[in-house]
Image (cartoon, rainbow, N blue to C red; front, side):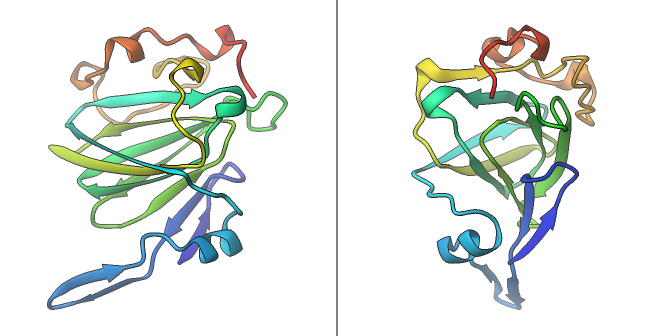
Length: 182
């Protein structure tokens, strides 16, 4: 497992060792021991999976309070641009974001610690997206920031008129309007 730093400390790209031959490939998608040693001692408690089509934008989501979550995200099939936004008040990178292309081919994963909003946009016809969380989903503690917040300024790399958002994601507040941050 190779650990690749990003422009924001604590947000880490993980590249597994892939063993490929004429039969296909094999890789270890998660090892608690290796993750603890090379990334952070995080205990994941829930796995989630979604399937989406081109242009679907999910995010930018996070949970607050005792239900805050760290995430380890990856793509099983397809391509996404995955984004983490630092929402830790007082952080030198507050409001900054990093983006990583995750694909079923590159097998990369992104570790997003607590204190970050997370989202992705689908760049392929279909994507199967999977992620681990270190805390359980708690509907009363979910929050988010607007995908198009000008203060954050994310370039999603696809035309806005091709984006598909849920009604919930279309109505999220801007970063400057949020009280419940880290």
